Image 1 (cartoon, rainbow, N blue to C red):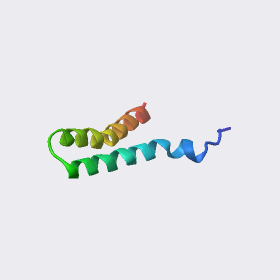
Image 2 (cartoon, rainbow, N blue to C red):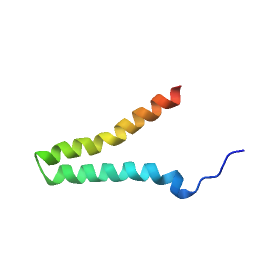
Image 3 (cartoon, helix red, strand yellow):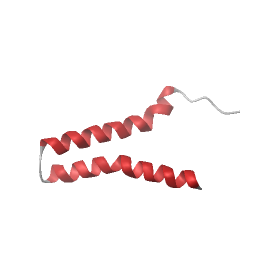
Image 4 (cartoon, helix red, strand yellow):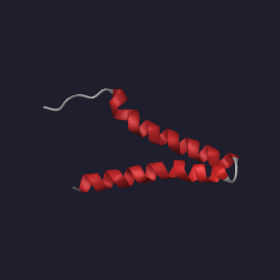
Length: 59
């Protein structure tokens, strides 16, 4: 029997990934230099999350 999870548990990680993406896009549009590096890092978080999920799902 599976345990029911609430909305907070189901949508916590997708919400964090969406916020990281939005922050990365806003930072990329508003500056140069260090902000470019910060935007690359913020936009790479969802990519790494998908890669991690695919790797753990295969095993």
